[in-house]
Amino acid sequence: MRSTWFRAAIVIPTLGSAALVSAALVSAAHAGPTISVATSASESAAFGSVNQSAGPFPWSDLGITASAGVSPGTLDVQTGGSTAFQLGTTFTSGEVLSSGDPLDLSYNPNWTGSSFHSAPAGNGAFNSNFVYNIGPFNGSTNILNVPLFVPGATTGHLASSLNNTIVSPPVSAAASVSGPGVSATATLAAQGCFIVCVTVASASLSFNVGTQIQQSVIATPLPVYGDWVWESTTPTYSAADHPVFVPGTAGSVTNAIEAPSGLSVGQTFYYNVLPGVELQMPIIDSADVAVPASITASWDIFGAGGSETWPLGNLYELGAVGAIDFDPTFYGSQFFSLPLIYDGSAVCTLACDLATFTVGGSGGGDPVSTPGGTVPGDTGPCGGADINCSTSVPSTGTPPGGYGNTPLGPLFPGDCGPIGTPYAGYCIDTPPTSSLTPNVPEPDTLALSGGAALSLLLLSRRRRTRGGRAPSVS
Image 1 (cartoon, rainbow, N blue to C red):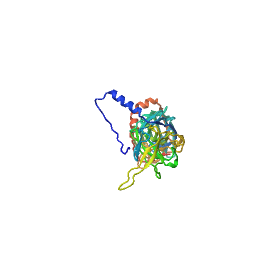
Image 2: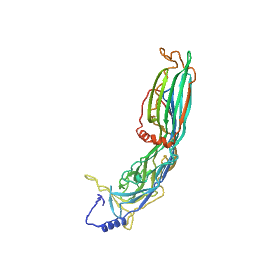
Image 3: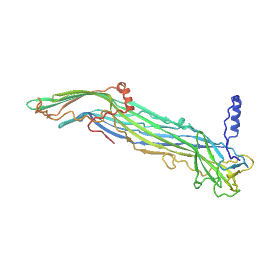
Image 4: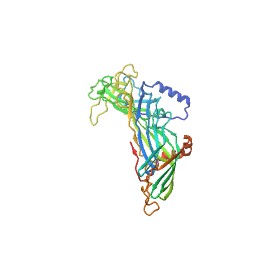
């Protein structure tokens, strides 16, 4: 009678490798039957895009605008391989067991071909204009209009994490690419006429504008290995049996043998164990567009002049984030079934003894069988029974950041010169003349000048708040 179950680990320093090999052979000789649980599933998630417009910057009436859209693209996730569950407890026909005695399984996961990759990867577009809006006059000149994308695929391999029976660490992958940029100088001059026509306002903006797109994907797998147990009067499975899930840990699952209610002494029943794997794996896919820019401005407006420099930093950042839950459940195509004859319990006096069972079968061998047939079907990561599925996921926008997130307000205090100054009576009454002198560098040039600073800025997501109009995010 197995009323108590002992496990012991004995280490004898004097034993050599031959003794260890002999012990391994004995263990293998007593190994029980094995059921393999296939762990193949896939999901394709198409993420939506996020758009943003900001500026003009530095001033609400004179500067450069920036607008962009970005999407994490399409994420493909797949798992493969199988997990082997082996009966770790052996039985002999005629053996007497007690309620609560163990029927243990060991498991060995072998996930293969398990990965995620984003193809197409993070992608988007960027547009920037030089604009002015002075009195009744306004104008706009495009300085940069480029597509942005992460080449190839952002890929992460999941097998090593999933095969760790103690803890499954997160798996992440990231890619960052510097895109095209432009250097230019924009000048503007406006005239006013009173007695004679004179230049009443002038401004010059020199700027470097670049682009960068970054994508990062992180998956946090939580595989749970275990089995579903139920008792029945026949070695079959039915949803009406109400199986109970028993999770395993560190490569083993421990089940306690019990009998169904309502049995009579001498009646045969079956203790059934269906091995399986539950996987919960949230995956976050994010893509960011960053605009590294430096601006130097000088101006003279109705006799008041000045200059200011905004060194290289992120003019603004735009982020899109999408998430899916990759949650399949895998069942074995067979289950372990142990035949038992109910012996009943002793008559209760001060206390009731545990029920006992005699292991059925004949021939003195291990009578555990592995019936197949009707078992639960695997459930897919999108819910329902479909193990391979596709889904559309809307992306959410992260709060925009960067020093150009909001304009500084108007540079021009009014359309006419202040009273008491030499410009009193002069008003801007002719369209401003403007010029734009571009000097478009190669992408690598801008990357060398700003790539290191930009990488740090992407991580810190530094924001500088200025008064003015906020950008719109959709």
